[in-house]
Image (tube, rainbow, N blue to C red; front, side, top):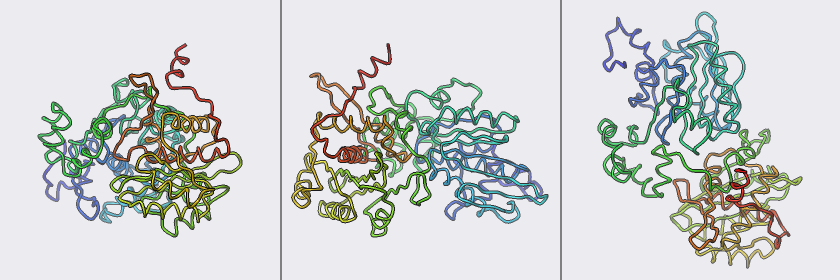
Length: 495
């Protein structure tokens, strides 16, 4: 049980022995004392060996898992802990969290920090005993026993081997803990099995948005009333204004998956998550030493971004552009084609742009070396497409989105992924958008391809990427690449 009132000086050490009390009494977050939500306090205080957290986005699940392991690093001699995340950027974020927590502690309550890199942090106690926290990007933990914390398991390449590796690392002692936390993805895989109770040894947490004080105006009453309400009812009754804005900006099914813990059906997905993860590089970064040199720009690329692109290119720069109205997101995806492969080099996403500003971005991309570009010329994209084609007839080509043209783009990208000729960053939003493209059959029997709108757009990055791949196919304009429909793949796999 978490003690709510701080004790007198004589009992302070005993009180702080509860990790939840330790966090609330000693941590600062953004310059203010930490106030845990009830579920976070329960997680930190729990001595459960195995814990799984099915969570909404933005509820502090990753922070809580990191806090749990960091506190143990300060209180258990010779502690060893490993964080596993879907990519290097998120893995290093856990070390940054850890460093911030350490910095916020009073000097008398923290161990001396003796090492700090982007992927590891180490401490030493007064007896010279060393405690270490490391981070891995989509790799199974190995080595001596200790704690393991896994973030976004269903989004990780080799999720099964990561999960099984973590079980072995934590098996050495009963005191070693495994914590798995993630938003939901598809119905299947280790994380889905954990959340649906297949392995009853796990202590299970389900944290929708209404159990988070940053998103809910009254979590005490919401925890009782919200589950029986419809989505719109609970958002209206209990949602903070920011949460209500998110809800009003996306279809309800997407909101329920992002914020209300609904796993999605994957049967009609054109690109399976398994296929995408096999082509996704978790060790991406904007330095030349990164296995995949990649930069994502949120907003209009700056002069330094364009200079970086020119410095980082290895072959021919080819792009796809999905334009947008002023209140929607526009996306530019640039791939680098060399030695028969395409590496995703840069993605820029911005909203609130006029068509004039969007054209300026394309102008700058072409001046920075993009030699071929495809742009969605459907509907509101027609005007900007025509202007660009007139100004750059050898470089720009508009593509009107029809069932036939979409299938051609999808087929080209599907074959490139199957052949491992397209390398993607293991960026959660990008992979999710590509994986959201669905093949559906209309009442008239026509096959259509759709990408539902969501908090991260309407598949803008995905379609821009598919346009770039189509441009990279170059002179093969008339030939449609071979492609097997989702329904046909399903029939064959059932035989």
